[in-house]
Amino acid sequence: MGHVVFLLLHIAAALLLWPLLFLTLPLHLIYAGTKRPGTSFWTHVRCPRCRNEISKQASVCTHCGCELVPKA
Image (cartoon, rainbow, N blue to C red; front, side):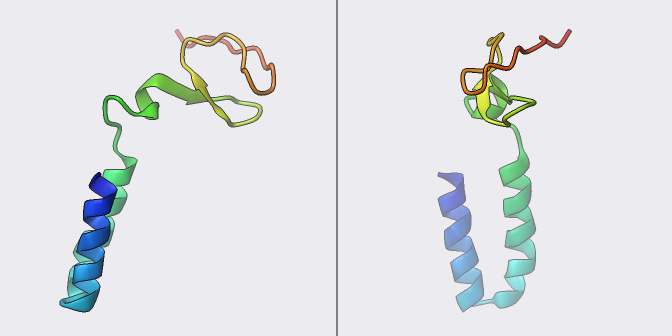
């Protein structure tokens, strides 16, 4: 939902006040990089071999079979 709001802000800034793009674009990048509860950042990790997202609780990657070492 947040990305749609930023997209509408980008369009409005581009059509009406293009200097506002210098504000909306960096804010969108910051928003996209933040970790929010309920997203894959909190529940999934990337496999070190195939880079696919897998559950944090997994001990073996379901895509490539790589054995995962849990972080202490």
